[in-house]
Image 1 (tube, rainbow, N blue to C red):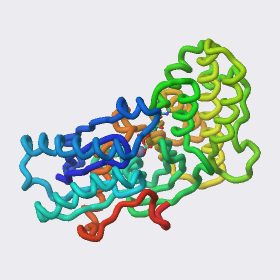
Image 2: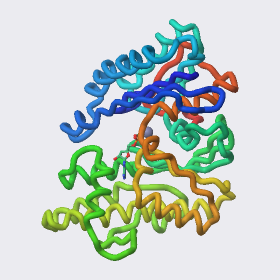
Image 3: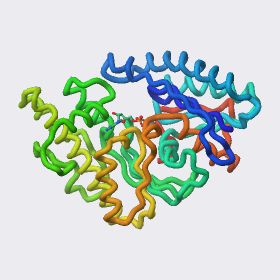
Length: 338
Ligand code: KG4
Ligand code: ZN
């Protein structure tokens, strides 16, 4: 088994993955959302201290149920993320690897999200392109093999999930804002069109020549709309924002399908991929372009150690290990990674 640890932001999570058939043997996640919602967003120092309590508690649970000798490698998210939270997981991973005398595998969190599609599945379906929508990133990535991933497009400013968090804050909704906006938007019954925008909003980068994402202009347009209306209109605002943000994702993804010789398989991954309207709208787009849409089960959309273990299993089979003492964490991906 591979024991994997994820602490890049506000989720403390540890998993055990079978090396042979990729079965998820154990997975536990302790979310800090409730604590951070008191502050309207993640407070890194508090997150770090909470990981320092939660990770050892999960580990203790694992060692009451499983034998240490069945663990063959330790996988750890090393980047991108919050430095003070990544380091909590990394120190635990290094200690375990030294104690058990087994290799360590540093994993890029974004690669983990891409491999969330293959949790509990022995074979990865490749080549694959992915739309990754999380709190920190909005990217289209093409994966040819576990070690060959190419960045096709990314956000020029805020990420998709981040814009939901910021708009939620403007509407006095708690953190994280994505599920809150989605819920509020459902309260607005207008037409049958799932992407109806009752308030006309500018679709970002509509006339931009390349493929890219941008959410800061849309966020500012929403700020102005909120100033104009009563609270009773907030569901209408949430619906309009969600629809416009998703239409923007679809327009850029469609450009990718048209302009690139893209693989048959297309995955939607990352925390914001839990959004049901986005899942449904992308399904329709993929049908039009004859793409096979792959979606992660909802429990593996947001940050988790199972996806880190699933990616690390490919590294393990290919003997891609890191040096325990020199392995570092970093808030950003490496220069040549994405
Ligand atoms: O991948 P993730 O768990 O953490 C990062 O790596 O950033 O993604 C968290 C992000 C947050 O911004 C959250 O608001 C957003 O995903 N999110 C959603 C939904 N559920 C979570 N955004 C839109 N709709 C949702 N249903
Ligand atoms: Zn994430």
